[in-house]
Length: 353
Ligand SMILES: NC(=O)C1=CN([C@@H]2O[C@H](COP(=O)(O)OP(=O)(O)OC[C@H]3O[C@@H](n4cnc5c(N)ncnc54)[C@H](O)[C@@H]3O)[C@@H](O)[C@H]2O)C=CC1
Ligand SMILES: NCC(=O)COP(=O)(O)O
Image 1: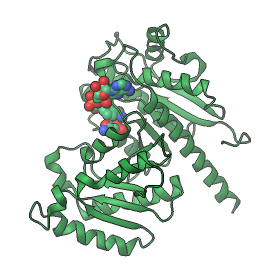
Image 2: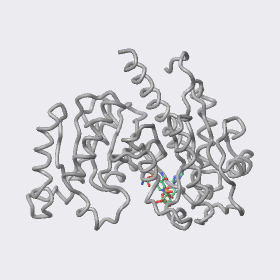
Image 3: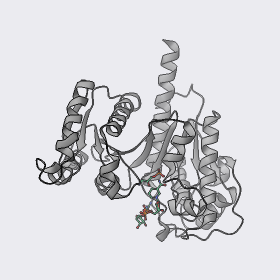
């Protein structure tokens, strides 16, 4: 429970792609958050084109429960010059979603917000609008001028309360580039970031972390691929020396690594790692989305502020129909509030020491 003596947490929600389901899941999640009293100590600011927020609200309000954008503070960016067609990937919608993210980041760096919850954008629309970033993570990291950042997916089991955490070592790159991009230096950077995040954001000082292999059966002693033998196993040995407080498991066969997560998700008392390190995007996200598509949150670690996002994309196939499920966005909002609150508490403790 948040302490009422603190001033409200300041959380920005960026519009995302207005042709997709981002504004819809945001307004639906806000309606649930309002009705459940989750925003009592939080001030929400909607960031982006006011016309796009309003259009989404007007389109859906008679069909489903959505919050009224007028109930929240606004940080506005330019409206699109022409109507946005739901479900279409265009330069106009890419420009609108990029400007909303840019403005949310600017507000955060100016000290207006402590956390940003980003609605999903379409990378293809950004490309059409001339913004060549592979995703929002890279824009956030560049704007915050951090040398290390990571894409961590977090999901809490509704049955057991166990929390699945999966960090991706590589993200939006072609599969064939993965073996060339992976290196001891990159994995050291990601692992140390994860260890810092577990301690600072989740209060876990002595975590167990499971690391996936790259090849089937983790290479089967080099017969099905050599990366494990050539450098992953020696690298892990060096990490055990460097982080003696951390129990490092692996490199483990990727096809069975997340079985423990499935069990801990369903049954209380099952032992499972505090976090998993996946070597590439789909290796980590297939188990996450199979287990927790409606609950997982994508959070960027390594930033000086909190950033969360739902685990799904723009879902153009169902945009504008009122059928998008808001649970992942709601989880992203709740996690953003919890992490921002933790960071405030830590800052207060440091001030009083
Ligand atoms: N955080 C972000 O900004 C993300 C953006 N994307 C972008 O989204 C676009 C579409 O990507 P896809 O691979 O198709 O993934 P997607 O997550 O948008 O859709 C995959 C499938 O899941 C369904 N779905 C997704 N969210 C749903 C929800 N809340 N309720 C009900 N059904 C839902 C969709 O209808 C679709 O059938 C791409 O441009 C991609 O770059 C994808 C993932 C994350
Ligand atoms: N698959 C995760 C994803 O696309 C999220 O990317 P980002 O926009 O948060 O960088």
